[in-house]
Length: 594
Ligand SMILES: Nc1ncnc2c1ncn2[C@@H]1O[C@H](COP(=O)(O)OP(=O)(O)O)[C@@H](O)[C@H]1O
Ligand SMILES: [Mg+2]
Image 1: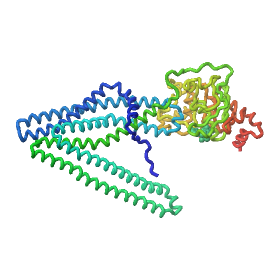
Image 2: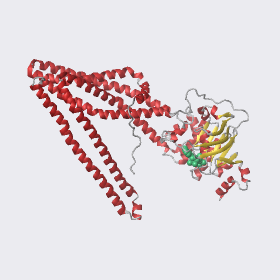
Image 3: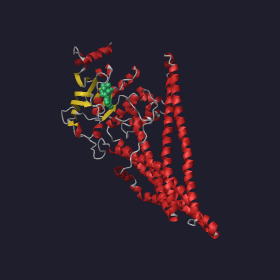
Protein backbone atom coordinates (compact mmCIF):
# COMPACT_ATOMS: atom_id res chain seq x y z
CA UNK A 1 0.00 0.00 0.00
CA UNK A 2 1.29 3.42 -0.91
CA UNK A 3 1.23 5.79 2.02
CA UNK A 4 0.20 9.30 1.30
CA UNK A 5 0.50 12.16 3.73
CA UNK A 6 -2.61 12.73 5.81
CA UNK A 7 -1.83 16.35 6.50
CA UNK A 8 -3.58 17.90 3.54
CA UNK A 9 -5.95 20.68 4.37
CA UNK A 10 -9.52 19.68 3.54
CA UNK A 11 -11.80 22.00 1.57
CA UNK A 12 -14.82 23.32 3.40
CA UNK A 13 -17.92 24.91 1.86
CA UNK A 14 -17.97 28.68 2.11
CA UNK A 15 -21.17 29.18 4.05
CA UNK A 16 -22.40 32.16 5.99
CA UNK A 17 -21.94 30.23 9.22
CA UNK A 18 -18.35 29.33 8.35
CA UNK A 19 -17.59 32.95 7.48
CA UNK A 20 -19.04 34.16 10.77
CA UNK A 21 -16.82 31.72 12.65
CA UNK A 22 -13.75 32.69 10.64
CA UNK A 23 -14.38 36.36 11.33
CA UNK A 24 -12.92 35.64 14.79
CA UNK A 25 -9.52 35.43 13.14
CA UNK A 26 -9.75 39.15 12.46
CA UNK A 27 -8.18 39.80 15.87
CA UNK A 28 -4.85 38.84 14.33
CA UNK A 29 -5.21 41.43 11.57
CA UNK A 30 -6.71 44.19 13.67
CA UNK A 31 -3.37 45.53 14.95
CA UNK A 32 -2.32 46.06 11.33
CA UNK A 33 -5.72 47.23 10.14
CA UNK A 34 -4.40 50.46 8.66
CA UNK A 35 -1.81 48.76 6.50
CA UNK A 36 -4.33 46.12 5.51
CA UNK A 37 -6.73 48.78 4.22
CA UNK A 38 -3.86 50.52 2.44
CA UNK A 39 -2.97 47.23 0.76
CA UNK A 40 -6.61 46.84 -0.27
CA UNK A 41 -6.61 50.34 -1.73
CA UNK A 42 -3.47 49.60 -3.73
CA UNK A 43 -5.03 46.36 -4.91
CA UNK A 44 -8.13 48.14 -6.17
CA UNK A 45 -6.02 50.85 -7.81
CA UNK A 46 -3.74 48.36 -9.55
CA UNK A 47 -6.69 46.28 -10.74
CA UNK A 48 -8.40 49.44 -11.95
CA UNK A 49 -5.38 50.72 -13.85
CA UNK A 50 -4.95 47.28 -15.34
CA UNK A 51 -8.50 47.55 -16.57
CA UNK A 52 -7.90 50.91 -18.22
CA UNK A 53 -5.21 49.49 -20.51
CA UNK A 54 -7.24 47.96 -23.33
CA UNK A 55 -9.36 51.12 -23.57
CA UNK A 56 -6.27 53.25 -24.22
CA UNK A 57 -4.86 50.65 -26.61
CA UNK A 58 -8.10 50.81 -28.57
CA UNK A 59 -7.92 54.61 -28.56
CA UNK A 60 -4.42 54.33 -29.94
CA UNK A 61 -5.62 52.20 -32.86
CA UNK A 62 -8.46 54.64 -33.57
CA UNK A 63 -6.09 57.61 -33.38
CA UNK A 64 -3.86 55.95 -35.95
CA UNK A 65 -6.83 55.84 -38.32
CA UNK A 66 -8.41 59.23 -37.69
CA UNK A 67 -6.22 61.61 -35.75
CA UNK A 68 -2.47 60.96 -35.85
CA UNK A 69 -1.77 63.94 -33.53
CA UNK A 70 -3.29 62.02 -30.62
CA UNK A 71 -0.97 59.05 -30.95
CA UNK A 72 1.85 60.40 -28.79
CA UNK A 73 -0.28 61.80 -25.95
CA UNK A 74 -2.16 58.51 -25.70
CA UNK A 75 1.08 56.54 -25.73
CA UNK A 76 2.39 58.81 -22.96
CA UNK A 77 -0.75 58.21 -20.93
CA UNK A 78 -0.25 54.50 -21.39
CA UNK A 79 3.29 54.91 -20.10
CA UNK A 80 1.99 56.81 -17.07
CA UNK A 81 -0.58 54.11 -16.49
CA UNK A 82 2.15 51.50 -16.55
CA UNK A 83 4.16 53.42 -14.01
CA UNK A 84 1.14 53.85 -11.75
CA UNK A 85 0.35 50.19 -11.98
CA UNK A 86 3.92 49.28 -11.15
CA UNK A 87 3.80 51.45 -8.02
CA UNK A 88 0.38 50.16 -6.96
CA UNK A 89 1.38 46.54 -7.39
CA UNK A 90 4.55 47.04 -5.41
CA UNK A 91 2.60 48.70 -2.60
CA UNK A 92 -0.07 46.02 -2.67
CA UNK A 93 2.43 43.18 -2.35
CA UNK A 94 4.57 44.88 0.31
CA UNK A 95 1.65 45.92 2.50
CA UNK A 96 -0.13 42.57 2.26
CA UNK A 97 3.09 40.75 3.04
CA UNK A 98 3.79 42.98 6.05
CA UNK A 99 0.31 42.42 7.43
CA UNK A 100 0.21 38.71 6.62
CA UNK A 101 3.60 37.87 8.08
CA UNK A 102 3.04 39.69 11.36
CA UNK A 103 -0.54 38.43 11.73
CA UNK A 104 0.60 34.88 10.99
CA UNK A 105 3.44 35.15 13.47
CA UNK A 106 0.90 36.21 16.12
CA UNK A 107 -1.37 33.34 15.08
CA UNK A 108 1.50 30.85 15.24
CA UNK A 109 2.37 32.07 18.73
CA UNK A 110 -1.24 31.82 19.83
CA UNK A 111 -1.56 28.31 18.40
CA UNK A 112 1.63 27.05 20.00
CA UNK A 113 0.88 28.83 23.27
CA UNK A 114 -2.47 27.10 23.35
CA UNK A 115 -1.15 23.73 22.21
CA UNK A 116 1.43 23.57 24.97
CA UNK A 117 -1.31 24.20 27.56
CA UNK A 118 -3.48 21.33 26.31
CA UNK A 119 -3.84 18.25 28.52
CA UNK A 120 -1.82 15.13 27.79
CA UNK A 121 -4.73 12.96 26.54
CA UNK A 122 -5.08 15.36 23.62
CA UNK A 123 -1.58 14.42 22.52
CA UNK A 124 -2.17 10.73 23.08
CA UNK A 125 -5.00 10.75 20.61
CA UNK A 126 -2.97 12.44 17.90
CA UNK A 127 0.47 11.89 16.56
CA UNK A 128 2.82 14.77 17.16
CA UNK A 129 4.09 14.64 13.57
CA UNK A 130 0.56 14.96 12.33
CA UNK A 131 -0.11 17.90 14.63
CA UNK A 132 2.95 19.82 13.56
CA UNK A 133 2.47 19.17 9.88
CA UNK A 134 -1.18 20.15 10.14
CA UNK A 135 -0.17 23.37 11.84
CA UNK A 136 2.45 23.97 9.20
CA UNK A 137 0.18 23.27 6.24
CA UNK A 138 -2.89 25.04 7.65
CA UNK A 139 -0.93 28.16 8.41
CA UNK A 140 0.74 27.83 5.00
CA UNK A 141 -2.69 27.86 3.37
CA UNK A 142 -3.60 31.03 5.26
CA UNK A 143 -0.33 32.61 4.23
CA UNK A 144 -1.08 31.89 0.58
CA UNK A 145 -4.60 33.21 1.03
CA UNK A 146 -3.39 36.50 2.39
CA UNK A 147 -0.47 37.06 0.10
CA UNK A 148 -2.02 35.94 -3.17
CA UNK A 149 -5.42 34.27 -3.26
CA UNK A 150 -7.35 37.14 -1.75
CA UNK A 151 -5.71 39.64 -4.08
CA UNK A 152 -6.40 37.46 -7.09
CA UNK A 153 -10.01 36.99 -6.07
CA UNK A 154 -10.60 40.70 -5.75
CA UNK A 155 -8.77 41.46 -8.97
CA UNK A 156 -10.89 38.92 -10.78
CA UNK A 157 -14.09 40.46 -9.46
CA UNK A 158 -12.91 43.95 -10.46
CA UNK A 159 -11.92 42.72 -13.93
CA UNK A 160 -15.14 40.80 -14.53
CA UNK A 161 -17.56 43.47 -13.29
CA UNK A 162 -15.57 46.48 -14.48
CA UNK A 163 -14.73 44.85 -17.81
CA UNK A 164 -18.31 43.93 -18.54
CA UNK A 165 -19.47 47.41 -17.58
CA UNK A 166 -16.93 49.05 -19.89
CA UNK A 167 -17.79 46.70 -22.74
CA UNK A 168 -21.51 47.29 -22.33
CA UNK A 169 -20.79 51.01 -22.52
CA UNK A 170 -18.85 50.52 -25.77
CA UNK A 171 -21.34 48.24 -27.46
CA UNK A 172 -24.08 46.43 -25.63
CA UNK A 173 -24.90 44.36 -28.71
CA UNK A 174 -21.43 42.90 -29.01
CA UNK A 175 -21.21 42.46 -25.20
CA UNK A 176 -24.43 40.46 -25.10
CA UNK A 177 -23.15 38.34 -27.99
CA UNK A 178 -19.83 37.73 -26.27
CA UNK A 179 -21.42 36.93 -22.89
CA UNK A 180 -23.74 34.42 -24.51
CA UNK A 181 -20.87 32.25 -25.67
CA UNK A 182 -17.61 32.97 -23.83
CA UNK A 183 -18.54 32.11 -20.20
CA UNK A 184 -20.20 28.88 -21.31
CA UNK A 185 -17.10 27.79 -23.19
CA UNK A 186 -14.86 28.74 -20.27
CA UNK A 187 -16.95 26.97 -17.66
CA UNK A 188 -16.97 23.86 -19.81
CA UNK A 189 -13.20 24.13 -20.14
CA UNK A 190 -12.81 24.44 -16.36
CA UNK A 191 -14.98 21.39 -15.69
CA UNK A 192 -13.20 19.45 -18.41
CA UNK A 193 -9.80 20.50 -17.03
CA UNK A 194 -10.84 19.37 -13.55
CA UNK A 195 -11.75 15.92 -14.90
CA UNK A 196 -8.36 15.64 -16.56
CA UNK A 197 -6.59 16.60 -13.36
CA UNK A 198 -8.48 13.98 -11.44
CA UNK A 199 -7.51 11.44 -14.05
CA UNK A 200 -3.83 12.24 -13.96
CA UNK A 201 -4.00 11.96 -10.16
CA UNK A 202 -5.38 8.44 -10.61
CA UNK A 203 -2.52 7.61 -12.94
CA UNK A 204 -0.03 8.91 -10.37
CA UNK A 205 -1.58 6.86 -7.58
CA UNK A 206 -1.65 3.74 -9.71
CA UNK A 207 1.99 4.09 -10.64
CA UNK A 208 2.89 4.67 -6.98
CA UNK A 209 1.07 1.43 -6.13
CA UNK A 210 2.92 -0.27 -8.91
CA UNK A 211 6.24 0.94 -7.51
CA UNK A 212 5.26 -0.41 -4.14
CA UNK A 213 5.11 -3.89 -5.64
CA UNK A 214 8.74 -3.53 -6.72
CA UNK A 215 9.82 -2.00 -3.43
CA UNK A 216 8.09 -4.58 -1.28
CA UNK A 217 9.28 -7.60 -3.20
CA UNK A 218 12.86 -6.38 -3.60
CA UNK A 219 13.25 -5.47 0.05
CA UNK A 220 11.95 -8.90 1.00
CA UNK A 221 13.78 -10.62 -1.86
CA UNK A 222 15.11 -13.42 0.32
CA UNK A 223 11.57 -14.35 1.36
CA UNK A 224 10.35 -14.17 -2.24
CA UNK A 225 13.08 -16.58 -3.33
CA UNK A 226 12.78 -18.88 -0.34
CA UNK A 227 9.11 -19.36 -1.07
CA UNK A 228 9.71 -19.51 -4.84
CA UNK A 229 7.20 -16.77 -5.51
CA UNK A 230 9.14 -15.04 -8.32
CA UNK A 231 6.47 -15.82 -10.91
CA UNK A 232 3.74 -14.59 -8.65
CA UNK A 233 5.54 -11.26 -8.10
CA UNK A 234 6.26 -10.97 -11.83
CA UNK A 235 2.60 -11.33 -12.71
CA UNK A 236 1.59 -8.98 -9.90
CA UNK A 237 3.87 -6.35 -11.37
CA UNK A 238 2.67 -7.04 -14.91
CA UNK A 239 -0.91 -6.58 -13.75
CA UNK A 240 -0.21 -3.24 -12.09
CA UNK A 241 1.91 -1.79 -14.92
CA UNK A 242 -0.79 -2.68 -17.46
CA UNK A 243 -3.33 -1.00 -15.21
CA UNK A 244 -1.21 2.18 -15.21
CA UNK A 245 -0.89 2.03 -18.99
CA UNK A 246 -4.64 1.63 -19.52
CA UNK A 247 -5.39 4.56 -17.23
CA UNK A 248 -2.77 6.75 -18.86
CA UNK A 249 -4.05 6.00 -22.36
CA UNK A 250 -7.58 6.98 -21.41
CA UNK A 251 -6.11 10.12 -19.87
CA UNK A 252 -4.31 10.82 -23.13
CA UNK A 253 -7.56 10.56 -25.08
CA UNK A 254 -9.16 13.00 -22.64
CA UNK A 255 -6.26 15.42 -23.06
CA UNK A 256 -6.48 15.20 -26.83
CA UNK A 257 -10.19 15.91 -26.68
CA UNK A 258 -9.48 18.83 -24.39
CA UNK A 259 -7.01 20.34 -26.84
CA UNK A 260 -9.51 20.02 -29.70
CA UNK A 261 -12.18 21.52 -27.50
CA UNK A 262 -10.00 24.50 -26.65
CA UNK A 263 -9.20 25.12 -30.30
CA UNK A 264 -12.79 24.82 -31.40
CA UNK A 265 -14.44 26.39 -28.37
CA UNK A 266 -12.13 29.13 -27.24
CA UNK A 267 -10.73 30.23 -30.57
CA UNK A 268 -14.14 29.62 -32.13
CA UNK A 269 -15.65 32.03 -29.62
CA UNK A 270 -12.94 34.55 -30.44
CA UNK A 271 -13.56 34.22 -34.18
CA UNK A 272 -17.27 34.59 -33.58
CA UNK A 273 -16.78 37.79 -31.57
CA UNK A 274 -14.48 39.24 -34.21
CA UNK A 275 -16.93 38.24 -36.94
CA UNK A 276 -19.81 39.91 -35.09
CA UNK A 277 -17.63 42.94 -34.36
CA UNK A 278 -16.53 43.40 -37.96
CA UNK A 279 -20.12 43.26 -39.12
CA UNK A 280 -20.87 46.00 -36.58
CA UNK A 281 -17.93 48.00 -37.96
CA UNK A 282 -19.38 47.54 -41.44
CA UNK A 283 -22.67 49.08 -40.33
CA UNK A 284 -20.76 51.92 -38.60
CA UNK A 285 -21.88 50.93 -35.11
CA UNK A 286 -18.32 50.24 -33.89
CA UNK A 287 -14.85 51.68 -34.52
CA UNK A 288 -11.90 49.43 -35.35
CA UNK A 289 -10.05 50.48 -32.21
CA UNK A 290 -13.08 49.63 -30.13
CA UNK A 291 -13.14 46.13 -31.55
CA UNK A 292 -9.44 45.84 -30.78
CA UNK A 293 -9.91 46.75 -27.13
CA UNK A 294 -13.07 44.65 -27.03
CA UNK A 295 -11.13 41.54 -27.94
CA UNK A 296 -8.50 42.25 -25.30
CA UNK A 297 -11.17 42.86 -22.65
CA UNK A 298 -12.85 39.63 -23.60
CA UNK A 299 -9.53 37.88 -23.04
CA UNK A 300 -9.19 39.52 -19.61
CA UNK A 301 -12.72 38.59 -18.63
CA UNK A 302 -12.37 35.06 -19.95
CA UNK A 303 -9.12 34.60 -18.06
CA UNK A 304 -10.70 35.85 -14.83
CA UNK A 305 -13.75 33.63 -15.17
CA UNK A 306 -11.45 30.69 -15.86
CA UNK A 307 -9.25 31.52 -12.86
CA UNK A 308 -12.27 31.85 -10.56
CA UNK A 309 -12.65 28.10 -10.17
CA UNK A 310 -9.11 27.71 -8.92
CA UNK A 311 -9.36 30.71 -6.62
CA UNK A 312 -12.68 29.45 -5.28
CA UNK A 313 -11.13 26.06 -4.51
CA UNK A 314 -8.27 27.80 -2.76
CA UNK A 315 -10.68 29.90 -0.70
CA UNK A 316 -12.51 26.72 0.29
CA UNK A 317 -9.20 25.35 1.43
CA UNK A 318 -8.59 28.53 3.41
CA UNK A 319 -11.95 28.03 5.13
CA UNK A 320 -10.95 24.43 5.92
CA UNK A 321 -7.59 25.55 7.29
CA UNK A 322 -9.08 28.32 9.41
CA UNK A 323 -11.72 26.02 10.84
CA UNK A 324 -9.10 23.41 11.69
CA UNK A 325 -7.02 26.07 13.46
CA UNK A 326 -10.07 27.38 15.30
CA UNK A 327 -10.97 23.83 16.34
CA UNK A 328 -7.56 23.53 17.89
CA UNK A 329 -7.83 26.93 19.57
CA UNK A 330 -11.18 25.82 20.99
CA UNK A 331 -9.77 22.68 22.62
CA UNK A 332 -10.03 23.08 26.37
CA UNK A 333 -6.69 23.73 28.06
CA UNK A 334 -5.52 21.97 31.17
CA UNK A 335 -5.65 25.01 33.37
CA UNK A 336 -5.26 28.66 32.72
CA UNK A 337 -1.63 29.78 32.91
CA UNK A 338 -2.65 32.99 34.57
CA UNK A 339 -4.54 32.97 37.85
CA UNK A 340 -2.77 29.82 39.00
CA UNK A 341 -1.18 29.95 42.45
CA UNK A 342 2.45 28.89 42.27
CA UNK A 343 2.66 27.57 45.80
CA UNK A 344 0.86 24.74 47.54
CA UNK A 345 -1.04 25.15 50.82
CA UNK A 346 0.70 23.87 53.98
CA UNK A 347 0.59 20.09 54.50
CA UNK A 348 -2.11 18.92 56.86
CA UNK A 349 -0.30 17.31 59.82
CA UNK A 350 -0.21 13.54 59.94
CA UNK A 351 -1.35 13.03 56.35
CA UNK A 352 0.51 11.06 53.68
CA UNK A 353 2.34 12.99 50.98
CA UNK A 354 0.40 11.09 48.34
CA UNK A 355 -2.75 9.14 48.93
CA UNK A 356 -4.72 7.19 46.33
CA UNK A 357 -8.08 5.94 47.60
CA UNK A 358 -10.09 3.38 45.62
CA UNK A 359 -9.10 4.91 42.30
CA UNK A 360 -10.62 3.55 39.08
CA UNK A 361 -9.06 4.62 35.84
CA UNK A 362 -9.29 3.83 32.14
CA UNK A 363 -7.57 5.77 29.35
CA UNK A 364 -9.97 8.05 27.50
CA UNK A 365 -8.92 6.46 24.21
CA UNK A 366 -9.87 3.01 25.51
CA UNK A 367 -12.67 3.62 28.00
CA UNK A 368 -13.78 -0.04 28.13
CA UNK A 369 -10.41 -1.31 29.30
CA UNK A 370 -10.02 -0.55 33.01
CA UNK A 371 -6.36 -0.08 33.95
CA UNK A 372 -6.75 0.68 37.64
CA UNK A 373 -9.61 -0.67 39.71
CA UNK A 374 -9.89 0.11 43.40
CA UNK A 375 -6.28 1.24 43.52
CA UNK A 376 -5.25 2.50 46.96
CA UNK A 377 -1.77 3.54 48.04
CA UNK A 378 -0.36 5.90 50.67
CA UNK A 379 3.14 7.30 50.50
CA UNK A 380 4.19 8.97 53.72
CA UNK A 381 6.49 12.00 53.58
CA UNK A 382 10.12 11.00 53.19
CA UNK A 383 9.27 7.40 52.41
CA UNK A 384 10.50 5.37 49.48
CA UNK A 385 7.84 3.15 47.98
CA UNK A 386 8.69 0.67 45.26
CA UNK A 387 5.91 -0.22 42.86
CA UNK A 388 6.32 -3.69 41.45
CA UNK A 389 4.15 -5.72 39.13
CA UNK A 390 3.92 -7.44 35.78
CA UNK A 391 4.40 -5.47 32.58
CA UNK A 392 1.17 -3.74 31.59
CA UNK A 393 -0.15 -3.80 35.16
CA UNK A 394 -0.51 -0.01 35.23
CA UNK A 395 2.63 1.16 37.01
CA UNK A 396 3.39 3.95 34.56
CA UNK A 397 -0.28 4.88 34.69
CA UNK A 398 0.00 5.42 38.46
CA UNK A 399 2.86 7.86 37.88
CA UNK A 400 0.84 9.66 35.21
CA UNK A 401 -2.09 10.04 37.59
CA UNK A 402 0.28 11.28 40.24
CA UNK A 403 1.53 13.95 37.85
CA UNK A 404 -2.12 14.66 37.11
CA UNK A 405 -1.76 14.10 33.40
CA UNK A 406 -5.10 12.33 33.64
CA UNK A 407 -7.99 12.51 36.08
CA UNK A 408 -9.29 9.38 37.78
CA UNK A 409 -12.90 8.53 37.02
CA UNK A 410 -13.63 7.20 40.50
CA UNK A 411 -11.94 7.44 43.87
CA UNK A 412 -9.77 10.19 45.20
CA UNK A 413 -6.22 11.40 45.10
CA UNK A 414 -4.88 13.68 47.81
CA UNK A 415 -1.55 15.40 48.39
CA UNK A 416 -0.62 16.17 52.01
CA UNK A 417 -4.30 15.85 52.91
CA UNK A 418 -5.59 18.21 50.23
CA UNK A 419 -7.76 16.76 47.47
CA UNK A 420 -5.68 16.91 44.30
CA UNK A 421 -8.42 18.66 42.40
CA UNK A 422 -8.23 21.62 44.78
CA UNK A 423 -4.59 22.24 43.87
CA UNK A 424 -3.17 23.91 40.79
CA UNK A 425 -1.55 21.30 38.55
CA UNK A 426 1.45 23.48 37.85
CA UNK A 427 2.04 24.16 41.54
CA UNK A 428 1.94 20.45 42.29
CA UNK A 429 4.13 19.42 39.39
CA UNK A 430 6.66 22.04 40.46
CA UNK A 431 7.26 19.95 43.59
CA UNK A 432 8.01 16.78 41.65
CA UNK A 433 10.80 15.42 39.52
CA UNK A 434 10.10 12.65 37.10
CA UNK A 435 12.56 10.34 35.42
CA UNK A 436 10.42 8.68 32.77
CA UNK A 437 10.64 5.18 31.41
CA UNK A 438 11.97 6.29 28.06
CA UNK A 439 14.08 9.37 28.49
CA UNK A 440 13.82 11.77 25.60
CA UNK A 441 16.23 14.67 25.68
CA UNK A 442 16.08 17.93 23.78
CA UNK A 443 18.41 18.45 20.85
CA UNK A 444 20.46 21.05 22.71
CA UNK A 445 23.64 20.84 24.71
CA UNK A 446 24.03 18.58 27.71
CA UNK A 447 24.12 21.68 29.91
CA UNK A 448 20.75 22.89 28.72
CA UNK A 449 19.25 19.44 29.13
CA UNK A 450 20.31 19.22 32.75
CA UNK A 451 19.30 22.82 33.44
CA UNK A 452 15.80 21.99 32.19
CA UNK A 453 15.12 20.90 35.74
CA UNK A 454 15.88 24.42 37.02
CA UNK A 455 16.60 26.96 34.27
CA UNK A 456 18.10 29.52 36.66
CA UNK A 457 20.72 27.09 38.04
CA UNK A 458 24.35 28.19 38.10
CA UNK A 459 27.07 26.34 36.22
CA UNK A 460 28.45 25.04 39.49
CA UNK A 461 25.04 23.63 40.45
CA UNK A 462 24.68 21.95 37.08
CA UNK A 463 28.09 20.39 37.37
CA UNK A 464 27.33 19.24 40.91
CA UNK A 465 24.09 17.63 39.74
CA UNK A 466 25.94 15.87 36.93
CA UNK A 467 28.44 14.54 39.46
CA UNK A 468 25.73 13.27 41.77
CA UNK A 469 24.06 11.51 38.86
CA UNK A 470 27.35 9.81 37.95
CA UNK A 471 27.14 11.59 34.62
CA UNK A 472 30.09 13.91 35.08
CA UNK A 473 32.57 11.19 34.36
CA UNK A 474 31.33 10.59 30.80
CA UNK A 475 30.42 14.23 30.10
CA UNK A 476 33.96 15.25 30.91
CA UNK A 477 35.32 12.84 28.32
CA UNK A 478 33.50 14.61 25.48
CA UNK A 479 35.75 17.24 23.86
CA UNK A 480 33.01 19.86 24.31
CA UNK A 481 32.09 18.71 27.81
CA UNK A 482 28.84 20.27 29.02
CA UNK A 483 28.43 22.05 25.68
CA UNK A 484 28.28 18.81 23.71
CA UNK A 485 25.33 18.90 21.36
CA UNK A 486 23.45 15.63 21.65
CA UNK A 487 21.48 15.57 18.41
CA UNK A 488 17.78 15.36 17.91
CA UNK A 489 16.07 13.73 20.89
CA UNK A 490 19.45 12.84 22.32
CA UNK A 491 20.25 10.10 19.80
CA UNK A 492 23.98 10.67 20.11
CA UNK A 493 24.03 9.31 23.64
CA UNK A 494 23.66 5.76 24.86
CA UNK A 495 20.58 4.75 26.84
CA UNK A 496 22.50 4.74 30.12
CA UNK A 497 23.98 8.18 29.42
CA UNK A 498 20.57 9.57 28.63
CA UNK A 499 19.18 8.16 31.84
CA UNK A 500 21.98 9.66 33.90
CA UNK A 501 21.35 13.07 32.32
CA UNK A 502 17.67 12.72 33.18
CA UNK A 503 18.67 11.88 36.74
CA UNK A 504 20.99 14.89 36.89
CA UNK A 505 18.05 16.99 35.78
CA UNK A 506 15.98 15.57 38.63
CA UNK A 507 18.84 16.13 41.11
CA UNK A 508 19.10 19.75 40.04
CA UNK A 509 15.39 20.26 40.53
CA UNK A 510 15.75 19.14 44.14
CA UNK A 511 12.11 18.05 44.35
CA UNK A 512 9.93 17.09 47.29
CA UNK A 513 8.55 14.13 45.41
CA UNK A 514 10.61 11.90 43.19
CA UNK A 515 9.09 9.66 40.54
CA UNK A 516 11.34 7.08 38.93
CA UNK A 517 9.84 4.91 36.23
CA UNK A 518 12.12 1.98 35.48
CA UNK A 519 15.07 4.32 35.37
CA UNK A 520 17.51 1.44 35.06
CA UNK A 521 15.51 -0.95 32.92
CA UNK A 522 17.56 -0.97 29.74
CA UNK A 523 21.05 -0.81 31.14
CA UNK A 524 23.90 -3.25 31.27
CA UNK A 525 25.16 -4.31 34.69
CA UNK A 526 27.97 -1.77 34.88
CA UNK A 527 26.04 1.34 33.91
CA UNK A 528 23.20 0.07 36.05
CA UNK A 529 25.51 0.05 39.04
CA UNK A 530 26.44 3.67 38.35
CA UNK A 531 22.84 4.79 37.82
CA UNK A 532 21.71 2.81 40.83
CA UNK A 533 24.19 4.60 43.03
CA UNK A 534 23.01 7.95 41.69
CA UNK A 535 19.42 7.05 42.35
CA UNK A 536 20.04 5.94 45.93
CA UNK A 537 21.68 9.27 46.60
CA UNK A 538 18.80 11.11 45.03
CA UNK A 539 16.13 9.23 46.97
CA UNK A 540 17.82 9.75 50.32
CA UNK A 541 15.23 11.24 52.67
CA UNK A 542 12.88 12.14 49.85
CA UNK A 543 9.33 11.01 49.20
CA UNK A 544 9.83 8.67 46.29
CA UNK A 545 7.85 6.35 44.10
CA UNK A 546 10.15 3.95 42.32
CA UNK A 547 9.10 1.56 39.64
CA UNK A 548 11.70 -1.12 39.11
CA UNK A 549 12.22 -4.62 37.87
CA UNK A 550 15.52 -5.23 39.55
CA UNK A 551 15.55 -6.69 42.96
CA UNK A 552 18.51 -4.53 43.97
CA UNK A 553 16.42 -1.35 43.71
CA UNK A 554 13.29 -2.81 45.17
CA UNK A 555 14.74 -4.55 48.17
CA UNK A 556 16.06 -1.40 49.83
CA UNK A 557 12.80 0.55 49.54
CA UNK A 558 10.93 1.36 52.75
CA UNK A 559 7.77 -0.23 51.41
CA UNK A 560 6.95 -2.38 48.47
CA UNK A 561 3.57 -2.31 46.73
CA UNK A 562 2.74 -5.14 44.36
CA UNK A 563 0.35 -4.08 41.63
CA UNK A 564 -1.84 -6.67 39.96
CA UNK A 565 -5.29 -6.59 38.41
CA UNK A 566 -5.42 -2.81 38.70
CA UNK A 567 -4.87 -2.66 42.45
CA UNK A 568 -2.25 -3.11 45.15
CA UNK A 569 -2.48 -6.72 46.24
CA UNK A 570 0.51 -6.80 48.60
CA UNK A 571 2.04 -3.98 50.62
CA UNK A 572 4.89 -4.11 53.15
CA UNK A 573 8.64 -4.30 53.57
CA UNK A 574 10.74 -6.76 51.63
CA UNK A 575 11.06 -8.97 54.69
CA UNK A 576 7.31 -8.85 55.38
CA UNK A 577 6.31 -9.74 51.85
CA UNK A 578 8.85 -12.54 51.69
CA UNK A 579 7.07 -14.28 54.56
CA UNK A 580 3.84 -14.63 52.55
CA UNK A 581 3.88 -18.28 51.53
CA UNK A 582 2.10 -17.86 48.22
CA UNK A 583 2.90 -14.21 47.77
CA UNK A 584 3.14 -12.65 44.35
CA UNK A 585 6.10 -10.54 45.40
CA UNK A 586 7.87 -13.59 46.70
CA UNK A 587 7.24 -15.31 43.40
CA UNK A 588 8.68 -12.28 41.61
CA UNK A 589 11.79 -12.41 43.78
CA UNK A 590 12.18 -16.14 43.32
CA UNK A 591 12.09 -15.75 39.57
CA UNK A 592 14.92 -13.23 39.70
CA UNK A 593 17.02 -15.43 41.92
CA UNK A 594 16.78 -18.40 39.59
N1 LIG B 1 -2.07 6.32 26.41
C1 LIG B 1 -2.69 5.15 26.57
N2 LIG B 1 -3.89 4.93 26.00
C2 LIG B 1 -4.53 3.77 26.17
N3 LIG B 1 -4.06 2.73 26.88
C3 LIG B 1 -2.86 2.87 27.48
C4 LIG B 1 -2.10 4.07 27.35
N4 LIG B 1 -0.95 3.92 28.04
C5 LIG B 1 -1.00 2.67 28.57
N5 LIG B 1 -2.14 2.04 28.24
C6 LIG B 1 -2.56 0.69 28.67
O1 LIG B 1 -2.70 0.70 30.05
C7 LIG B 1 -2.19 -0.50 30.63
C8 LIG B 1 -1.15 -0.19 31.68
O2 LIG B 1 -0.04 0.42 31.08
P1 LIG B 1 1.22 0.94 31.88
O3 LIG B 1 0.74 1.77 33.01
O4 LIG B 1 2.15 1.55 30.94
O5 LIG B 1 1.80 -0.45 32.43
P2 LIG B 1 3.19 -0.73 33.13
O6 LIG B 1 3.92 0.57 33.30
O7 LIG B 1 2.82 -1.37 34.43
O8 LIG B 1 3.91 -1.70 32.27
C9 LIG B 1 -1.65 -1.33 29.49
O9 LIG B 1 -2.60 -2.31 29.18
C10 LIG B 1 -1.51 -0.36 28.35
O10 LIG B 1 -1.77 -0.98 27.14
MG1 LIG C 1 5.65 1.25 32.52
